[in-house]
Length: 371
Image (cartoon, rainbow, N blue to C red; front, side, top):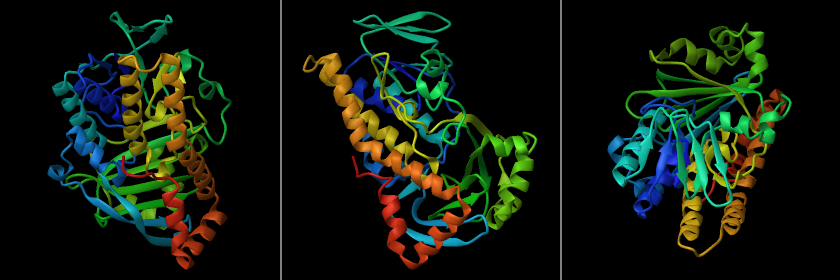
């Protein structure tokens, strides 16, 4: 079996199937460890599953997050307890740890290998890389938010005209700062929002999402945008002025799309952001990727043991994915629209102070149960 993309979903899927004694090859275009643009906050619904995979979260001393701060552009601040909570961990550490576990499980991990195409002939798959071609009885895609395969296959979201759902820019830093370790902050600004959360060690993840128009209006200069646009929020102004950025940052990504995506393409099951991306302010994309790997592993094993056919596998995986995640994505898009409207955001913060249960309800609708 072949997996394209070595993020959380791809690595987790590979570990599960390799431990079930299947031969797995996984293609990753980068070399581990490396940084990704990510909020690096994981809902506690994923804690048990990561421990099951072999990630010793307690040994990493990851900070457990129990509180939330949300601010409007003008600096109005809402403090809220998180109904489920989560923890902070960098993708640099987590992906590297999962990659090592995958190797230990027997996954043939092909780093620095870009997949140019995957062709299904009705029976099996040919995976085409610049170096050579590979044959596989089954293939899955977990190749992230936007890849060369999306363009090659002309997936509808990759061809859509630029609009409010598909033309975002993400920027991430690791910083040293003074902020409560048990709290995640979400600060809004004109056409964007920025999260701050502690990860392992003494580092904090500072990650924001904004429109390409904001960057263009700043002369395509990230520092100018941070000063003139993000800095309009006094909380963000203080964070950027008082935080010390690490030398390897920032990491950026463009053309992020929240348009609807299919969960099956070229008769391949898709996982993680390749199947659908929840808006980052919901803080639950990493849990969705991990959970999807568990759903996919079950359906693939049923196929490989002859208990279901290929069409049934595709339909059942799509049904399960939609059941667990489609509602969260819809709610995430709605919350993002609200967060990008300053007047609505002020009302939401005011309402959250008067009715604390309001924010808890919104958070619950973007999260699931332990899996």
